[in-house]
Image 1 (cartoon, rainbow, N blue to C red):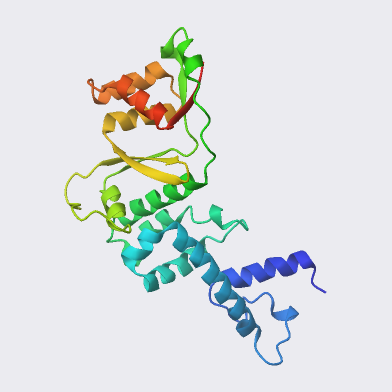
Image 2 (cartoon, helix red, strand yellow; image 1 turned 180 degrees about the horizontal axis):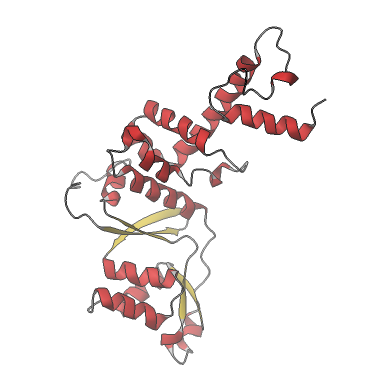
Amino acid sequence: MTKLAELQTNFIHDCLSGALTADNTLMANDLNTQLISAQGLMGIYQSSAIANITNSLSLSYPVIEKLVGKDFFQVMCEQYIVKHWPTSGNMDDYGEYFSSFLAEFEQVRHLSYLEDVAQLEWRFHQSSLANDNSHFDWARLANVASSETITFLLSPSVSIMHSTMPVDKIWLMNQMNAPENIELSLDGDSDTFIMLFRQGLKTEMMTVNESEFTFLQSIENGLNFEAAIESAKAVDANIAIDHSLKQYIELGIISGFLI
């Protein structure tokens, strides 16, 4: 008799391994096949599993689904699932590699913006699941002798992203009640610097300039305040660091600091 652990492993394999044949259906010896073949029986479970996982991907990537159409999105998801099986029962953890998959998927490789749009959607998803901000201690900051040595901390929900495509506009144009006056061009230099952060239950998107992005990236990389300023000023010597820092703290983008 097949052990339970082996049965479970074989069941998952048959559900997520693509086309079932007599040679690759591992559950074949443990099924009653008098009325229907092992491939037929496992095909029912396989279809259900793929549909449920596809639904999870649809929740994480609604703009991608809208851009390529529901039917084609389902086809892509089936291919993605075969290449990247879920490793957790928590579907919130699933879909991280969808953007890189799109970059290699032959039928959409000419749609070069899809990869970055998917990256943006995954960051939205992750931001929505992140821990809440901690309360920023203004009083403690006021008592710091030298602010240059402080290492500021980004909120757990913050995610920053650089794209050579106008992915912020593509995302906005595919939202319910999208603004009607968005001008979109996929030609030329379209460098876009994006910051995502959550306020309450809603994840917000803010477009920043390159120097502000560099400042935030320096903080994300663990540089102290002085080094972060130097990095930002190397991009734009006129960046208003004091204004940006105050805004980021008030919005909860910067949630704390280390001395």
